[in-house]
View 1: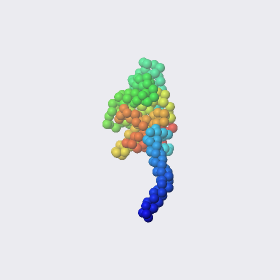
View 2: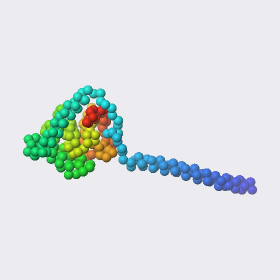
View 3: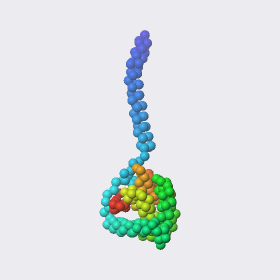
View 4: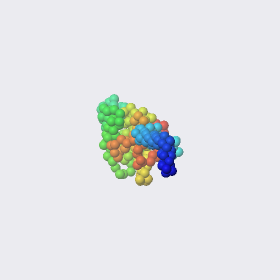
Length: 229
């Protein structure tokens, strides 16, 4: 009889505790669901990069880079004048300007990221790659001879401006290869809505800078000067 009484008492206690157990289980399930939703939100929500690679920059302290970019900006302005002249006069004597205008006009037939992709493809195919040492050249000079990453990047930087991309939405960025730290590479980045897209002479694929884990950004060059990451 004592055993039967004990069993009934145990069953009654279990029934009394059931609401609390259920409530605890529901709370635990709710916490797990909230965590899952948060993770899925992070995975599915597009990256919002205020700066390329999502990394803040500071004004550069490199006198050499500052001088180099200031001189190159002067040459860029001269090339812009030459391109304008050749757009007005189709018989101008600058073969490089005419080639670049043809690439720009082909890309202009598209819009958005497709336009950017066509420009990247056109310029990647317009310059013969060389392993030789190539100095920093202004765009039209770079287009007229074999070049390296700097040649492709500076031509794209100018061409994006000719397509109407604002100066604040395009930048040259110097990178270091993560797996090969001695390798320095120059690319162009262009803002596409809330993303910074990389235009690279090594690929026709347009890559979001946030997911470009193979590179470490070092310096950027734009209308406001030189900045360090």
